[in-house]
Image (spheres, rainbow, N blue to C red):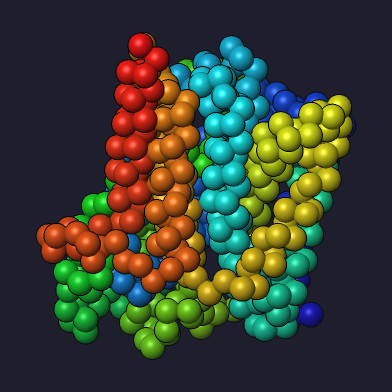
Length: 478
């Protein structure tokens, strides 16, 4: 066993033990297992939501996009602050309503607001479908990190199955309490390592950050700017908008905000979350250093840029530490996602269809965890998307829940349950056509809108259909 594998195994094992200890009596009730008994304060909510938002996508995907597309990576830096402003006003309102009505999942919110189990099932299905690519993203990241940092001693497939088994065990045993404990370790490790790499690597190779950027621009003029081609300003703005809208619409984001002990905690959290943005700047710098040091990686290999650069620079034991940090960035959000999918599937899809299952709700949720992971593992074996591509697909799907959410807080909600259902179906249908066929909706738009994110197209269609159906329903009922 080389030193990298040893260090990687030790840190991962310690995090696993931390996740499952002292959980006796805390996982027998669904509310306690899924949302931590709504008892987490400012620091724990900050760490938990940071743990789910800054994931393998941040660790590998951000540097990969900087390596591949240069200035296009700045969209990641731009959308989160906009989302935090939305979250400052929106999340406390969601939490208060959830607390008042004892809601556990995202679908519960829509069911209660619109008095429609059918809408709840649809929201659950959209969330389920959107979260599978997000879970695959974490699985894909695990395979890359462990395989590369073990210098090939552990294959990507073996790493994926082993780490997935660990994730399943600690989700079933510890629930949300286990995730938040590991999130603490993960945040300390990832913050320290990314800051270190973002400063050390440019100074080590090129004498500083400024010199690195200048050299990138010399070798690849305009690389650090937004392109006028594939990832053009229209793509950039529309993707920033879509991602900002969708950031808190993931089912596991609802699960995490439900853990808060008060609405005030969520407001403080929205103020503190932009601190994580400093992390992203250093991730991009690492990607730019990799573009200079490791030219020629194709699109499929670009997710390896950060890890390959680290292996070429440091001794094996330190590579193991970095690999462990990367594993935790996948395990924490992966566990929260897995927990959320299981809760959604049993509580809001299976029980409405088979009401008798409600008597064994907690048991069924836990039993569904390994089966959901198996679905993700099988889907991963067929997928060829990059980490960034997987996430953008998911954002396009969950953003279709936005109109019904926002309008539900109006004193006189202009949206009916049929309108919400119709709009979501149209939006999701457009997303599926885009994903599963060769149809490019940009071909039907004016040239000035070339590059518009298909998720925005779907969202506009969703809103139009929602309002039309709701208006027609009101007129008919008169």
